[in-house]
Length: 470
Image: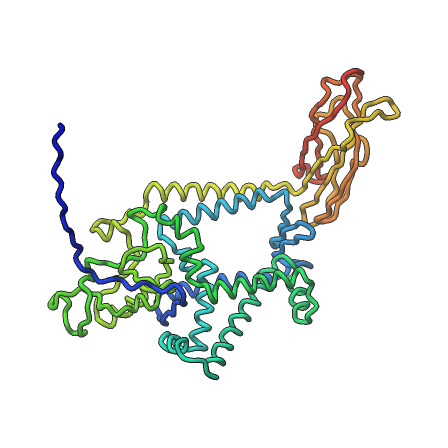
């Protein structure tokens, strides 16, 4: 056991490999124009989202804006419905539904949200389109950037940034228009009479849009977006992700169209680099699935166009699963996806039920800071302030009362008539009609009920305080 194990040094060497060229992080990615079915699908989806975002803010519902978060009055109008701070639990439900929807679609088809509907991606595509129209195609833009400053370069750059700022200003105005009525806001902006607070937020979102979509672009997706970090946790072997078919594509190499790949020991990939040139994040999908991939399918459209020209079957780059690439069959229905879908459907149903059952009258009770007092009849009284909100779109009549108020008497205003959306504070008192309280602090329940529709009511609880030595 005391003998030493002999040690000798073994020299090792690593076979030489071609070094990957590091992608520059200090320049923007210049993408090449392309066409294809996924591009058309993305344009359709983005067009609908733009129409929804820019158009909804200008719709009216009666005498008010159809969709408006009125911060001054703490109201959120969505067409015929008005939501109050007391209804914000519904917003939590909506956010949970959005989260589970994102989880489900990620498990099924990867980052399709990023590639087709993410605002960062959608606005970046618009800015890149403006750049292409004004400065030319990819090679022209690269040459223009490398060229020394001249009148032509100054004019093109000025026009491009003017277009970017115009789109950013319209975006910022529209976004703020969901919190401040957009028609008077736009009129005040055009006449330079806009208030300081509104001007600040319009300029803030204008600058944010200009910076993110014009300058940062793919850096937001690569370095700032948390979705890229946790997407791999949600992927499994059956997730449909954009993938390069190595078995079919390798070995890569150029060849003439009439040459069959097998005759020259090549795969279907002709190494044209078009999939890299159209990628908005500048990656090579042939290196495998990467965090930077936003699932936009631009590389699929580009590769399919080359496959058509070479008379090869499409799908060298396609939406497929790891299991299928390994020779198996993709399982679309699997426990994790079914679980997310069941929870998503259940949450949507719960939110729909909550919206249907949402009380159209609200009641909040605030007890006076004084403990108690004695009235002219020698009864112990507590003072309360009742805040009643009419959440309907028409005038309503209400009645105030106590629930199971044996031994107590509600005194003050008990009949109310509130206009649509009106809030009223009602001071009332509650007198104890018994000689000796059951305890020094008891629970009281106040109730407000619609005089015409008894099914519309709200209940709120408070405490009644009385001395024990009576």
